[in-house]
Length: 323
Ligand code: HEM
Ligand SMILES: *[C@@H]1O[C@H](CO)[C@@H](O)[C@H](O)[C@H]1NC(C)=O
Ligand SMILES: *[C@@H]1O[C@H](CO)[C@@H](O)[C@H](O)[C@H]1NC(C)=O
Ligand SMILES: *[C@@H]1O[C@H](CO)[C@@H](O)[C@H](O)[C@H]1NC(C)=O
Ligand SMILES: *[C@@H]1O[C@H](CO)[C@@H](O)[C@H](O)[C@H]1NC(C)=O
Ligand SMILES: CC(=O)N[C@H]1CO[C@H](CO)[C@@H](O)[C@@H]1O
Image (cartoon, rainbow, N blue to C red; front, side, top):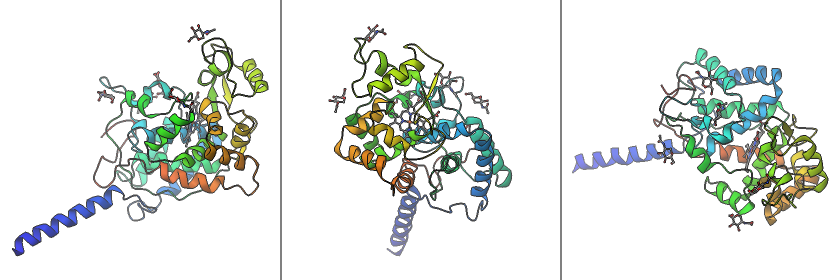
């Protein structure tokens, strides 16, 4: 009897500790094992972004793409192999850049604390620091993610919302990742930095419903401006998503969207739902904006999507390859 009780106790203990692991991200996770990790990441990221400020946007976007496909497990960083096409090499990742920068930060961390800090955590920290360096908000990053061993390009198309999604589809896509309509409108504020290829929105300018028409949701003066930059078949040009301040993380995006100048259907769509529309209008005009605080909260939430923790996955030595 005593023996059975003992076994039961161990079983319950394991079940509980396993559950803790599954939710176990925490600020200061590496306090004992790699106390300088955040300082190293900040120093390296500062060096990288000072030299190439336009890398901040694709790195922030990379974290989003990582989290929406198999959770924030660094799977976006894995390279394809002879018998596997990785996420990196799927169509929506065509314009992602900055993989080399993540590798460089990882090497710097490895020098100090070999085999301790995951690539998934490094990407999350670099995304936070890159945002901060473009004058965006700071937030504490809960850490303890482990790296996945699988990266499958097909899963990108299934999990990432494309730029032509309408509001219903966007809300459903975010809901499938545990994010709500507020997270959607807040995280879309990332489009206050960075650029887009013409091909991501050019049907809105030339052939919206397939009869040579334009998108009525897009301001007609803006359409004329965009047409001058983007020919119908352009494959080389980039357009600033928040024109004039695409290197500064600010509220500018919401002013653009409120003026019907959101670049993608997915940006314009935020005016089609009462809750997201109210948020866009408020942030477009408000002086004491809550955007930075909201963004911090939603980024922490996004950073927890389907994470591997405890003894799941591994700590990759090189971010492009499984151990
Ligand atoms: C709501 C659904 C979203 C859609 C449909 C979407 C779609 C896109 C597309 C099509 C581009 C342009 C890519 C190109 O043509 O080069 C882009 C750029 C970007 N996205 Fe999103 N995005 C979404 C949400 C997010 C989120 C949640 C984040 C970050 C938390 C984000 C961050 C960025 C950034 C920073 C860029 C600029 C990248 C650069 O300059 O290279 N996006 N997005
Ligand atoms: C991984 O692939 C990228 C191209 O997608 C390449 O530039 C890089 O050198 C590769 N990384 C390694 C460590 O081989
Ligand atoms: C990749 O994902 C797709 C869609 O879930 C699946 O059908 C396919 O078998 C996967 N490929 C590999 C190599 O696991
Ligand atoms: C969004 O698109 C889906 C699929 O095409 C469609 O069923 C739905 O009615 C659309 N919703 C809105 C609000 O346009
Ligand atoms: C517009 O789209 C329709 C339907 O997809 C296509 O048949 C047509 O060729 C396109 N027109 C142009 C000018 O690209
Ligand atoms: C940076 C990077 O790896 N981009 C890849 C995205 O996917 C295409 C294939 O669709 C590759 O050609 C690119 O190299």
